[in-house]
Length: 217
Image 1 (cartoon, rainbow, N blue to C red):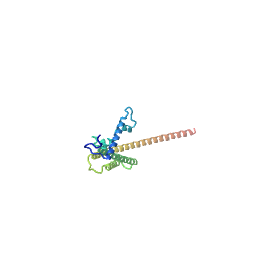
Image 2: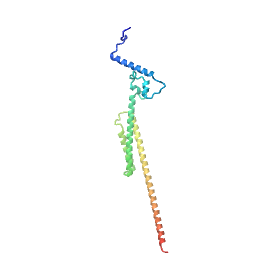
Image 3: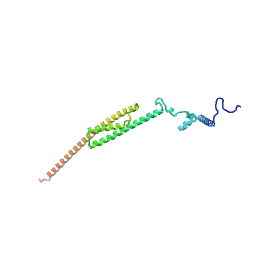
Image 4: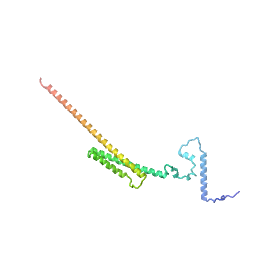
């Protein structure tokens, strides 16, 4: 029997390498036993149960790279995809901030319109000014970046203009509604005055009839 030792062309393993090799062999044997024990007629109850029975991950799991798992031709890699998602989230936050600012502006305009402090032209001009100011605050601080930042700025400017037009339309609708309410109140007051006049006339007629009845024949 040949003596135990390294094969020709192979160096002898160190004690640490022997321990690692033995541990990997035990893990591989355990994975093979787990696969053999899988019952194809019994469904898995949990995700952990399925992974434990179907995925021999002890030995071969370390060979996979986490970045490769998310890399696709469409996203050009998981890192680039994460950057794109972050930029989109930032743009959405800026658009939401502009919407909140415009809502505050609209509320202020409604309060001023109820008080009658300014004319309609002044209010619309003030709305335009505040909308432009909100868009300027939400714009990127640096204009050197091109590509997606430029497209985002153009889209944001178009969105701000659209929201400004919607704000002006709401103001006109609010003004028309207030005019209609004012006319309805005037008509109601006129009807009440007419009813009061009719009641007064009826009372006068009743008094006259009573006076005529009280006169001696």
